[in-house]
Amino acid sequence: MIDRQSTRLSNGVNLLALFFLGALLAAAAELPYGGWIQIPVLSLIWWRMSQESIPSIKNQFISGMAFGLGYFVLGLWWIYISLHDIGGMHAAVSCLAVFLLAAGMALFFSSASLSLCLPRRRYLTGLVLAASWVLIEYLRSVVLTGFPWMGFAEAQFNGPFAPAAPFFGGLACTFLAVWISWEITQLRKNIVFSSACIISAIALAQLASFWTFTKPIGEPLSVRLIQGNFEQSLKFNPKAIEEQFSFYTNAIESQSADLIITPETAYPWPQSNLPTGLLGSLQQFSTNTSSNVLLGVIGESHDSTEVKYTNRALGLSPGAPSYQYDKSHLVPFGEFIPPGFHWFVNAFNVPMSDFARGRLDQTPFSIVRQGKDAIQAAITICYEDVFGGELASRIHHSTKPVNLLINMTNLAWFGDSQAPAQQLRLSQLRSLETGLPALRATNTGITAALGPDGKVLSQLGEFTQGVLSVKIQAYSGTTPYVIWGNAPILSLACLLLILGLIRQKRI
Picture 1 (cartoon, rainbow, N blue to C red):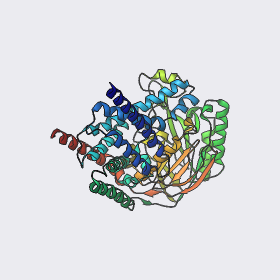
Picture 2: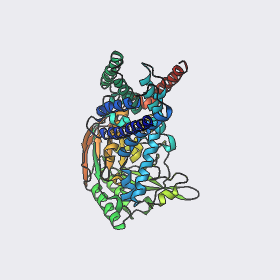
Picture 3: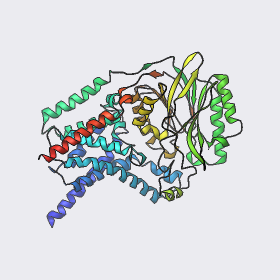
Picture 4: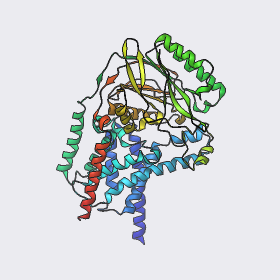
């Protein structure tokens, strides 16, 4: 009886430790050089999860859940703000919703951790663990439309393996971070082999940073990024909307530029219901000043039975028809309602929370300049820049070479939290993967201009109202990741996992 109680106590302590280590791993991502810091933290997690020579599937699954819960509860707590502070949902229900989402995400981590149940092979265990993690992270990006937020790759933008992104994408960064963190746990057992793996992987990754696949094209663009800083709770207040319209319109027309961008839904009314003459006035401004303007509006999609709304970027260019990009990858519950969940959305009564999807093959936005070649910009709206593979595929299959990335977003839903910094890292990773500079126009922050290496060139402070005026150099060319996508790293992961299973059957 005493031994049984002692075992239960030991297991409880281990699960609690894994929960806090998971939370520490999420917190490390927010720190300078967070990708470097995460690797030793991951090593501690693997060490605690591999104390048994061959752990049971049940114990390993529960351990993975504990680690994953700590990681996602801390990393995604900002969803509470949108549900409770903005949506008006009861605090207890909001906490439960965050916990359930964290638990759902932790299930993926638990599944990847099961590879540690395979018999340990001196050279293969870490590779199989990394392969499992890559495959599970890919599944996390596609199951139920995907929610790959808080992957290890974003932190690696500030870590040792970021240079792998232009070659094989963020999943390759994840693979290397997991593999090398495992090898750190093996230093006492296999110091020569593990040291060689660690040093070689970091050295090769750093050498890869000297390769560039894109180059500057044409003269820099003059750009104005407008940050309105309007509270989300006022989005459906008529007086507040009128003030918002006035601010953005005045800010646009106050000064010309090659490109002027507002945030997502800066004009939060259906396009056909915008004030009379507004779009005509802005089009006239565009023509008179040779300025290209991108507006965040609510678009409308007509079919045979009903009118559905879209989350739209509306482009106005001098002497050209208006352009529109309708958001394709929608946020579950925020922009589309999965079947059977209308009751959940009705609980916090947010208007226009079931949008139509835009096509996947939408053309880039042509930035027209007098006497110069047009610059082509690939647009993403908010959450879409989480999906690096989708963006790379769009660029690869575009009928016009893409020279610039633009993200329009509204993170006022998440208040004063780490969500804006998390999405900035995602945009930085997208720039690094594609070798293209990026512009981010946001409502409350972080509005920024990024270089083709993802580094921040200039930014506005969060929760301030203002305009960021910058010069941005467009680039041409494609990285290997844009050409190949995730196919190479997924193929490698599948081969390693198959090899691990074959070796298990031989034992």
